[in-house]
Length: 62
Image (cartoon, rainbow, N blue to C red; front, side):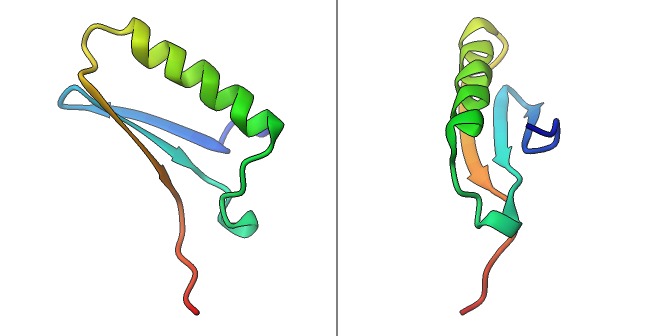
């Protein structure tokens, strides 16, 4: 999985994990789930993070 499929940022004690697959409508597959699991574990281990947001990149207009 490319390194930029999940983006991770922390500001003001809030972690933001962005699924960055707008060309696939941010669909989740096994490799994305595995990496998401790893990032969630990392968030849990960090005492400086108080909250987390999981979001998707891009928009699709109908």
